[in-house]
Image 1 (cartoon, helix red, strand yellow):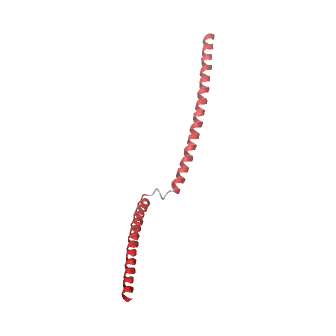
Image 2 (tube, one colour):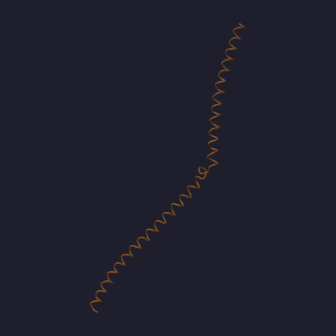
Image 3 (cartoon, helix red, strand yellow):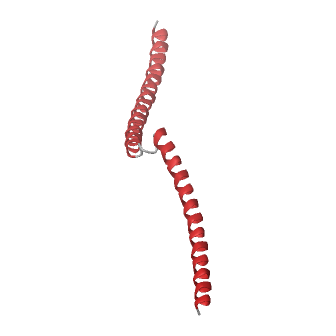
Length: 106
């Protein structure tokens, strides 16, 4: 019985040390989980702030409007270029007409 008692006590000591080690591992894992959750919450709040700041860029309607306006601006610039060219041609025509008119009057 004493031998059996000693064996059981030794086994109990081994199991007790193993349990202590498992408790330490569990505590470390819990700390890691808590730290990870805290970091996740920080990232979520930072993401929410950034989303709030860039709300305009996330809007589909605003993106379409921007594209339409950019295309309209390009069209208007092309029209301005054509009108400037026509104006230049008309100015040259007027100068030639004035030169011919002054040549006739002299």
